[in-house]
Length: 445
Image (cartoon, rainbow, N blue to C red):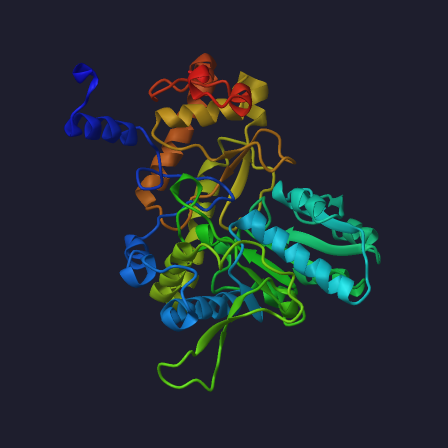
């Protein structure tokens, strides 16, 4: 019995070793297209750990949490202003939850005017959560193809619009990393048939301080605070997916939201929780992932309007730098200046050498880089979707370019080397199909 016991030192060394095997944005570049895995400033962490925030309980009387309510109120207001809308709910727990909330708000607004519709349009580049949300909300999914430039085919969109369409869901910039140049024509066409325009805010990081979805004609937008405003996500912590809407949709937002009593004096209850008059009800318990809200609030206040714009501009510059440097190594399906991300194709490499996108992704691990998003969007064969974000230094971007160049050379000279990667990771290539089906990780090693 005594022989099986471990000392505190042994236990600490065991877990420190396990931690050293992890890969994260704090240890290296994480160029996941559409995921915006940028650095999370440690100041954000310090702020959400302040006793006045960390020790709160959601059942406390509003009079005892006025500071927290003020932060939430100001964040609601700031997000609405940044995105060009009138009102915000902070309740949704992440992006897909924000999509669901926005579409339910749109549904409630339509039903309130006796307008029961059956269809929601989405582009063929949409995130997979978009059609899932449409189905969950009881609508039929209609896919709109992209044109030769990688943007929404406006003619086909107009042909698909009728009085049965409840909404058009669109990511802008789209999932190919391209800005929809006909965006106001798109939103005007949707509004002409009495439908609403919803913007998937996954790519808002490209627009900060430059332009606003509300000004493009969108009626609702979800914002991934855990992407755009630099809070942890994925294995790093919970998400948050606030939804911003126009004045027309504001009465249907889930409640409660934070309101300000302009007549309140001094230490009285200036901030309170209220429920919009035609609210769809709660979409989660309590008021949202509060610690994530504190992080995002800190990020916005530290950068200010000029800093937010500078971050977006740097994200655009970094992505276009990588695009130009890599376009001679892999196919560039849509040869246009990109926004904060871009999509390459390894289809030519596959035909010539047998090396596929998954092989390139695995080989990148040997060079110390997390792979980009692969095989998405679905309209690009052997897709590599790359987003460097604004927080990666030039030396890291050049290192990524060098690694991709070496892998391209290896693919031509020794394809079996690339196909067998990775070689220098804690485990070799896993059975990904089995990983989906098995909850026992040991079975995959």
